[in-house]
Amino acid sequence: MRKEHTQSLAPWSWGSQPKRRTIMEKKPFYISKTLWLNVLAIAGLIIESYTGHILSPEMQAMVLGAVNIILRLITKEEIVWK
Image (cartoon, rainbow, N blue to C red; front, side, top):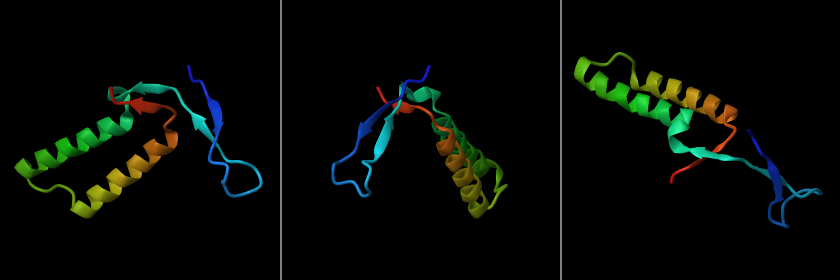
């Protein structure tokens, strides 16, 4: 279930209408797809150090960055670190 509430930002916001932001439900950090993707990326780097380079550092950065952007676009909930 997803609850959304809107809340005004600072009164000095630009534009004629005050900007709104969405307050999202929170989820535990261990459910975050972005967190697990980055854990897998670190594991991949460790494995590469033992087996030899499979992908160039530029290719790794490009792929990881692109997937992180995609995950950020589909994120619906804020994570809780407690």
